[in-house]
Length: 217
Image (tube, rainbow, N blue to C red; front, side, top):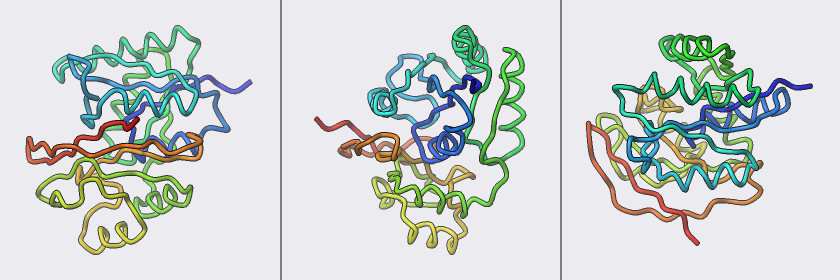
């Protein structure tokens, strides 16, 4: 019997690739996402909850969330882990690549709940990971850019091999591991069909620009 696991889910390409890599090794029984205090956006990527819920429905996997401010994020994440542990979950899959602080935090939080953190992408070359994601025929739209690295003309664009190559030439990490950009996956083989979205207003805060995505239909 495969170990029961949940995936720490941002809705972006890295967590999707992590899921893709381990789906045959674990019984994936849930996606977990931290939300803002009012539940209206995901805490890390600022996505509408219905977008993440749509991904979960297409995967046929329950979606578990917990609301939190940054000030009480660790406590809230611990409560979320406790909830899934009660469902006989033993492992949590993360899409971290670096830095070390991310892995240390994941292992600490999971260890505190008697769970094992799994990092399938850890420390691998990010250009290879970006190309591997694209080789699965998946589609990820750029939803957030850090203004110091990229302008808002990239918002709403799909990540492509050509764009990865351009990022490498510009000194931009092709997986956005220095916070250069975030993505939302609109198509993955496990979904069965693409997620139709429309782009809305661009919001700017804390040196970043983000485009609002909404479900269509």
